[in-house]
Amino acid sequence: MAYAKQVNGYVQMANTQVDQSWVLVTSQPESAEYREVWYLDGSDIKEDTSGVAERVATAHRKEQVKIRDKALASMVYDFGDGRVMQVRTTDEANLLRALKAMTSYGLVEIDWVMEDNKKYSVTAADIEAALASGLLQGMQIWSEYAP
Image 1 (spheres, one colour):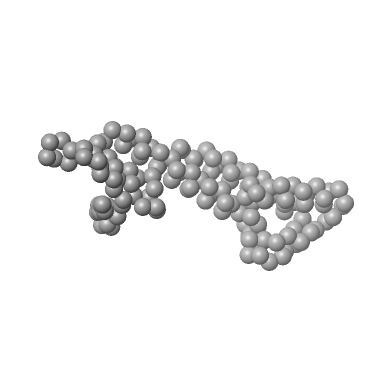
Image 2 (image 1 turned 60 degrees about the vertical axis):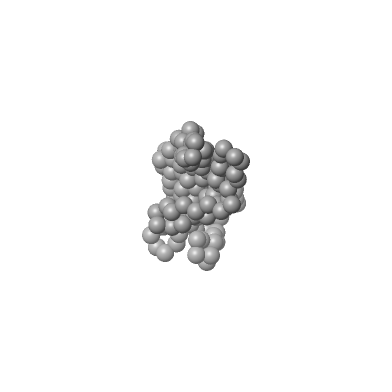
């Protein structure tokens, strides 16, 4: 049995399962979190709204996680001279290793592949500034995350 519901001007199709006194509606796959339960009350079909708040909260939490993860994956440090370095949490270990290598071997500059996939020279001070910015950005994103 097919089910259609208009939401925000769009028609959403879903699979339904019917068993004499109830109908379970689960949206197709882009809205897998959405679920409605309907029941028969005499000859009327009514929506069972129990658990709606929990389902809405779960969907909201998952949306907030997506927003947070996108922000964390987009963290960059702009040097202001055309160089933009990615400072995501996944980049932090590479930056720390580069900084350690520079100080251990007395390197003044190294080449670093920036956000635009081009190599630029960076100093230890550049890397330290980028790391500090990344840490602050990450703390800000996590403080704004409201599950």
